[in-house]
Length: 95
Image (cartoon, rainbow, N blue to C red):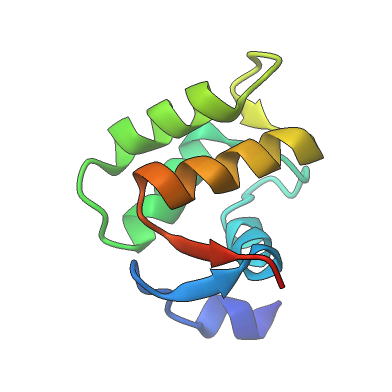
């Protein structure tokens, strides 16, 4: 985990789905295993992504099936990955 925190992730870097999940865990501030809109916003800001707040809001809206403003299930994570690939232009692939 400490190694991932030291790794600088760049916006156009390719990564596996597992690497994407590990990267998001860095921003899970309360360590509850869920990713909130605020936590995802911080993750996007770390990439120096423009309009990170707006993009995080749209991503959570698209992926959050139960409308609790968090990504908290495998199916929601899968939707978040697809959103990141399509709308955030992140290169995420199966391992």
